[in-house]
Image 1 (cartoon, rainbow, N blue to C red):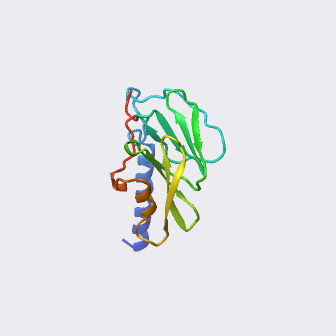
Image 2 (tube, one colour):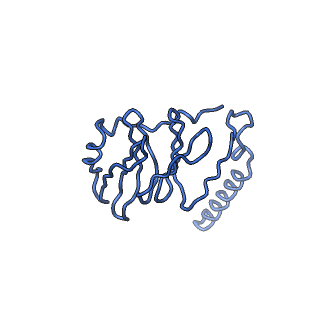
Image 3 (cartoon, rainbow, N blue to C red):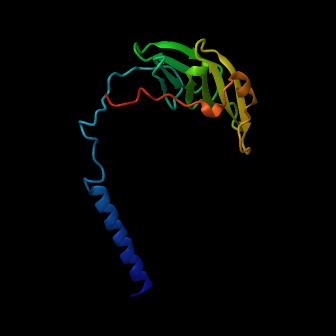
Length: 165
């Protein structure tokens, strides 16, 4: 068999396999209706700026939504805005440490500098920030240690509220 003929056969075999996978009902199907998950309510946020990772503090009943330049803090029960923490840039994800009264959010001060902003959970005030320059292998955490006595590695996000109902 010639090389050209072998390539043609291989091509059509790939096309046929791809078509079978795409058209097969076992590959793509909806989640079962009895999965235990359902929408309880929808909260319209409004405002400008996109948002990234949402964090739920189930103990304090707060939802932290990092927008582009600020963090919206929503009351989980009423759906109302509790506060809006300003003064940051390029935000991504929030981690809360209620036992230390601190919240942490990742962001970008500039294109070259990544930042971790630290805020007080009770007052919702920005307390400090610490940055890293692209190309370095670790985050400079001197400001974070001054703002929070426990090691940063002991802080974990709280996701207790995300469970089936």
